Amino acid sequence: MVDKYRNHISGKWSATGSLGTFKNINPADTRDIVGEFPASGKEEVDAAVAAARAAFRKWSLVPAPKRGEIIKRAGDLMVERKEDIARLMTREMGKILIETRGDVQEGIDTAYYAAGEGRRLFGDTVPCELPNKLGMSIRCPVGVCGVITPWNFPMAIPTWKIFPALMCGNTVVFKPASDTPATAVKFVEILLDAGVHEGVINLVHGTGKTVGMPMVEHPGIQLIGFTGSSGVGRIIGEKCGAQLKRLSLELGGKNAEIVMDDANLELALEGALWGAFGTTGQRCTATSRLILHKKISKRFVEQFVEKAQKLRIGNGLDESVQVGPLVNAGQRDIVHNYVKIGREEDKATMLCGGEFLTGGDYDRGFFYKPTVFVNVTRGMRIAKEEIFGPVVVALEVESLDDAIETLNDSSYGLSSSIYTQDVNAAFKAMRDIEAGITYINGPTIGAEIQLPFGGMKNTGNGHRESSHTVLDTYTEWKSIYVDFSGKLQRAQIDT
Image (cartoon, rainbow, N blue to C red; front, top):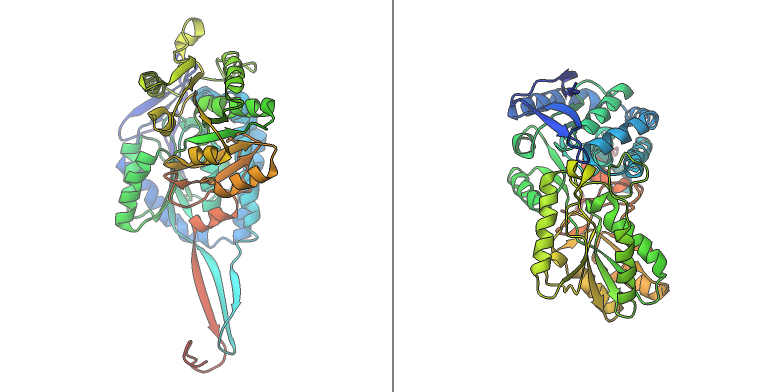
């Protein structure tokens, strides 16, 4: 018996989709059908936008502290349902249980942070140049927000966008990735159980082509929040730009860990393994480049390969497993194609991996061996393009300046890392690395919600998620002048 999931539009759940249905399959065991979902199109998008627009006025007039209390209750419900959500998430996207529990915990943290902002939403009060006149600024909601999220963090990333959007007084049309729609249903159920009003949150299942683009093009949506590839982000940017529609893009990365010759190598190895193979390398912040000082490069690579080959790979529901499958057959093919490219590029040498895992239970899933390349140079495709899988390339450098220059030689600028015990080197890296996130003596993954998340260059369009900075995405600034002088006063003239 396959579980049947639904869209949620205008306060009602509906299992019907104008384009039929689609199935969600466990990438660790393709015999396991997680559920059947409505395949939606423009018809459902139009209905969801109409519902969100109708609900906006009433929801935006709810006092922000009260909206925050609803978000707080959602966080409490996530605490209660954390284990069930984590297990469902592992079934539908494959990453191991400790990671899916962490994914839910990030949503919980975001709920409590966003709830607190309901009693802040700070503006400014400033002196005016004329007597008996007050100047201040306040935040106003934008309107209807279209939220389009990826499959690798199916709870955390939607909460990064939807909790602050709702807390700021906006309404939402939500399109989750078609690889992880079940987690999205559980999230919307939590919002409704917490007390979010009818029509404020609307869930539409479907593909980027049939649901995502109609949302981007819809004149009734004032803002798009998108996390995904830089290629798709450019297309969305063009379409939103033509409409002067507000847009927040969080896109790809080609993140690097620098290991200097004075580093604690055991710590750096642990960080590299976690950064490279956590979530099977399917993170925008994954460590896909190791930039190694020549004095320690050979020793580091030998130990890294040895540890990578010992990682336990399998079904993420098994608590002993360290690395799960890739999310689907298409993603596994993309990874394998990049491995072929790497093997054909100049002098690059593959030291381990490069193959599907086969035999027994592996034949029922999309498993791939952790893969490491050495003798890689900056210009190679495997050193420049995002692979989004368990593939790591090692580049050797002569000095700190060489390491930073090599790290910055990328069209992306999301996350970065340096291992060194030299405080001067650490501070130089903090200043000179071109990335939105820099870790000192830590891996490239592990962002916390109280600091801004996002990147430079082709990693996005300048917006940030998490922390108080996300409020600038989901609010409009209004400046207010109050003149209580009882006469006409002309700024810049009657001074």
